[in-house]
Figure 1 (cartoon, chains in turn orange, red):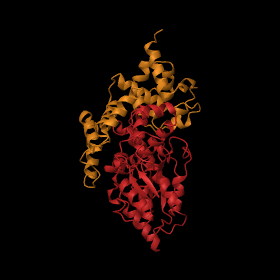
Figure 2 (figure 1 turned 60 degrees about the horizontal axis):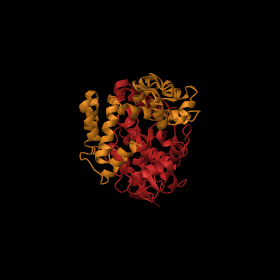
Figure 3 (figure 1 turned 90 degrees about the vertical axis):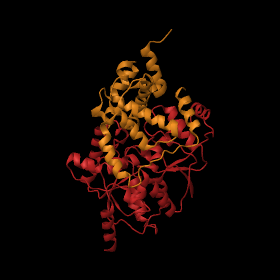
Figure 4 (figure 1 turned 45 degrees about the vertical axis):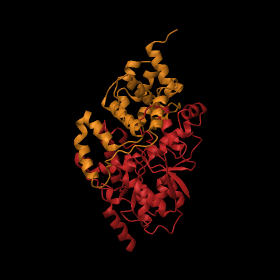
Length: 177
Length: 280
C-alpha cells in the first residue's frame, strides 16, 4: 500500500523529530514558554498538531518556522518529553528540500554552504552574501562594521580548514541518512 | 591542568574579545589550553538537520583525548547535545562511518565552569575584588541546554562566580530569557525587541554591568545597545562583559589583555568606580 503525500510527510517528521510527537496533549506549555510566540501564526502548539495530523501544506507554508530562536525552552518544559524545536528543525529541513524560499531559509543555506566550502563561518562573507540578496538590513550592518573594523573584530581573510573534504562528506552523506 | 580549546568561529571576528580574554584568564589561572587541531564550525543554530549537526560536532570532538573547553554557549550546547546523541549506537555508527578520526567519547566544559573550579574562595589571586559592584548574571538559553548540567529554570553558577569575585549578583527576571540573537539577520526587529527588554530589565534591577557567557548574547546586548537606545528613546548605558573579562579584571589583568577596548559600551567608567572603591 502506498502512502499518501501527507502520510509520507508525517512519517518523515516523526523520523526526524521523534515518535513522541504523537503523544502531544496540546497543553500549550511550548507556546507559553516561547520568546517569539507573539510572532508565530500558527503557534508552536498548533504546528506540532499539524504534523501529527499530516497536514503538510499548512505545516510547511508559514512564518512560524523561521521565528524560532532555537532557545529550546519548549523542549526543556514539555511535560510529554516532546521536542517541539526538533519538529521545527525537521520542518525547516523539509521546506528546504521542497525548494521553498524565504529570507530565513536562504540565510541557513548560505550558512551551510560556508561550512561546506571553508569548514568555518567567515562572518563578513556570510553577512555580505546575505545582504546582497536581502539588502534591508544593510545600513545597520554597515554601521556595526564601521565600528568593528578598527577594533580588529572583522576578519578580512577567509580561513579554510584542511579537513574540508571530510566536512563536505559529513554534510552530504549524513543528510541522506 | 591541560584542556583542549575550541575557540569557535566568532573568535576570529565579532567575538574576538571573548577569545583574547579566555586565553588570558586561563594563563593567569595556570590552565594550559591546547587549541583543537583544524576545528570546524559547530553549525551554531543554523544547521537544522540533527544528524548533520551531530557529525560536525563529532569531527571536532574526535580531534583530542583531552576534555574540551569553549567559552561560547552555542558551541558548548552543540557539542554536549552531540555527545548525548552519540551515546546511541545507531547514531554513533552512522557518524563514525563518515569521519576520518573516529569519535570515541568526550567531555565538554564551558569556560565559566573551568574558571569557577580554578578559583578558591578568597583566592589570593583576586587582586581587584569588586566590592559591591552590582553584576547582572545573564545566562541566556543555551548554557543550560541540553538538560543535565545546569538547571534550565534556576541556574546559579554565574551568581556563585560573581560572589567569588566579591561582587554582588543582581536578581533580574529575564536572566534566562533568550536574547533573540539567532534570528537577528533575517528577523532584525523581532530579535532587537527581545534584546531591548532584557537590557531594560537589567537596568531597572540596578545592574552596573551585565555578564554574558555567549558571543551572540554579547552582540545583542553590547554591540546593539546604542542602536536600541536610539530606537526606544531610553538610555541604558550598561557595559556588557564576557565572564572571562569580568574574571580577568578581578585577577588584575589589564584592558589590553582582556580586549576591553573592543567592547562597544566602554567598561572604563565602571572600572574607575571599582578602583575608587578599592582605594577607599
